[in-house]
Image (cartoon, rainbow, N blue to C red):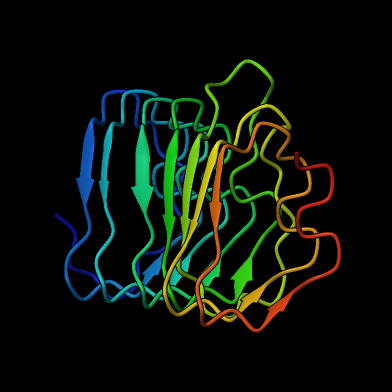
Amino acid sequence: ECNELYIEFYYYNHSNLESIIFGNEVEHIPAGICYNAPKLKSVTIPESTIIIGDRAFYGCSSIPEIVIPDKVTTIAQNAFGMCDALKNVTIGKAVTNLDSEAFIRDDNGEIVSTIVWNAIHCNDFRSDIRRDSLRTLIFGDEVEYIPAHAFPASAQMKTLSFPESLKEIGKGAFSYST
């Protein structure tokens, strides 16, 4: 367990790391903290977290799901890139900066099938989720805005519902969806 408020930049060999629990006071998960930890299956991000850095969990190909707490405002580039087993993602309420490549992966990875989107007003996000992947998209009760081009390649969407709080859907947010 790590209780540092801020941890410096890491790129260590994490080949045997299977679980990580960040302490309750951690605000910034730094770039590369768990870079290329192929056996990592469990990540606990505390409610105190505000920023998830570049490539923080890049190449952690065994993580099946991730829950982004409600205080997180920024999820940086490739934060969860090449997490090929990642199927379920829950985005917290405060996310305003979500890099378009935060969840990027190659064509051989498993597919993200469910996103629970609680971000009340995310300014910019262009999904990199493959066209054949997203099947369920659930918006939280407080969501007010869905960014332009957020989910443009969701051809296999089966479940989509909008909350009463929704005020605006950005241009092309669901282009190519069926």
